[in-house]
Length: 122
Length: 173
Image 1 (tube, each protein chain N blue to C red):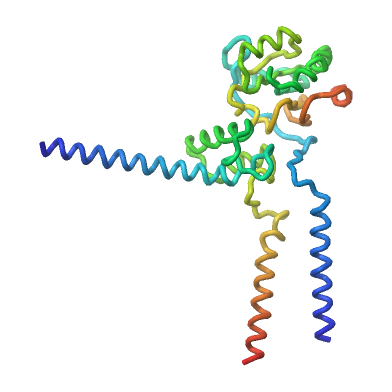
Image 2: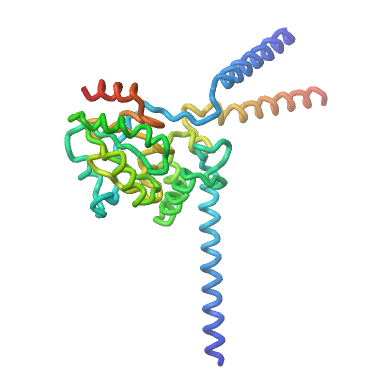
């Protein structure tokens, strides 16, 4: 009876562990799919879309992740096929420096102005 | 002096915003893929339509020839429209047509070919659309012109028309 209980606990914990890792894997895949733009439907991600294009991309992404590829490798593959537009989050490169750095620069200028004003008041 | 500087900064910022928004007005918010591209041919393995065996891309594009990879399906109405033009293009000896049957029912696809003729040197089956993604396609019909160096040199989105046929003939001349 004790051995039966032991095996039952072991098999249940293995089962729940597998379920959790599958859930994590699905979450990971969904996060990637939400960051891929559906190119034939306006304003929808591949995750949200039911189009033929989106379903093919979903299959490809699933396969790539199951084959052990990283998130960056998936994005790189899709960028090669469809260009930067296909990924929602733009990559930091010479074309997107302004896009990434301008908010930071404006934030710093704003901060500097505030500090200066506060110091002036004090 | 300080006020002048402030005014200049405000003016420059406004001009900057104006340019950004003005440029944005001209830009389409729909995806317009580049058609004159130069990309390497993807390597893949696909099922042959008539033989039902798997073939490698190296064997498909083995001849030193121009190739057109045409993505088609029996359910696609524009494909029916472009088919006679593909039949005409097939008469040209310096180009070989490869068909990519996209997400189709095999018997319907065979009916389509029997009814309208077969312009393709070889037809490959793309049951789940993943092969089309390898080419960077996003819909059907779509065609890719491949040069003798096995580079994709042109992407044709939508059905092929007479002007495109003339353009292709000029390239492969």
